Length: 92
Image 1 (cartoon, rainbow, N blue to C red):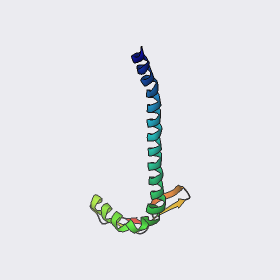
Image 2: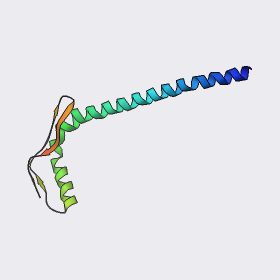
Image 3: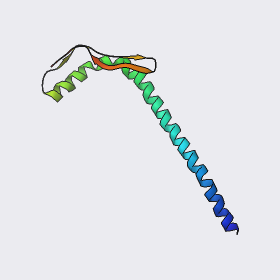
Image 4: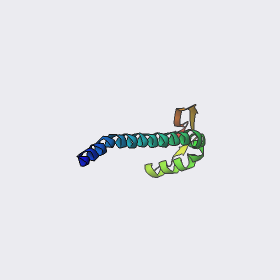
């Protein structure tokens, strides 16, 4: 009878373990999203104009034509992006 009780206690503990693992995984995913969003907002978006030359060369290579991008800028307002990668003038 003690083997039966031990088996029942293991079965009863299983949902608790699964629940803890699920909440832990959700926490890890949430933290990864926060880190990604913070990097986007505070590191990538303010420096998008510095990548104008690279964007020009990638577009020229992809199209097989010379591409000139006048300005490349992005804005963020708080935690939301107003616009990302707006090109003012593009000539192909």
